[in-house]
Image 1 (cartoon, rainbow, N blue to C red):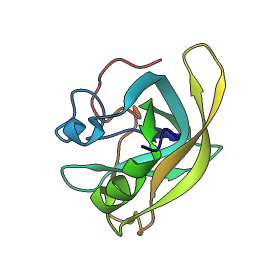
Image 2 (tube, helix red, strand yellow):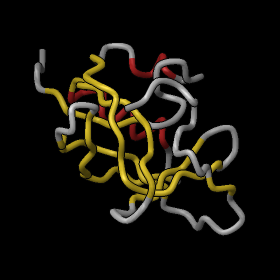
Image 3 (tube, helix red, strand yellow):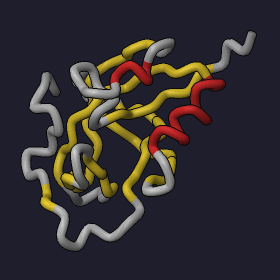
Image 4 (cartoon, helix red, strand yellow):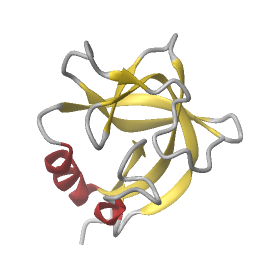
Length: 123
């Protein structure tokens, strides 16, 4: 069995309390964290565009078994690209994580100004 894992940042329906959190079964919650960017309402789910000059976007960091990464890529679909990024946890520490970034145009999408898709606990 492969025991390697990856850190991922989730900011929408995969978060605890999100409609698709079940896809995170087998992973371990590490912390709440924030990314810098712009969060948009795409449909019943959000899209994040990373921007170091952007707003704080609330999410959670998970340790995910490496073999789950392909399944998460499939879940996110072709509208997103998985990129390496940096988030900040509640203790102010930087974490290098995988983030699924929205890759389609944002014209006409509603921006979520508070940066929290679920309005759940955040830093």
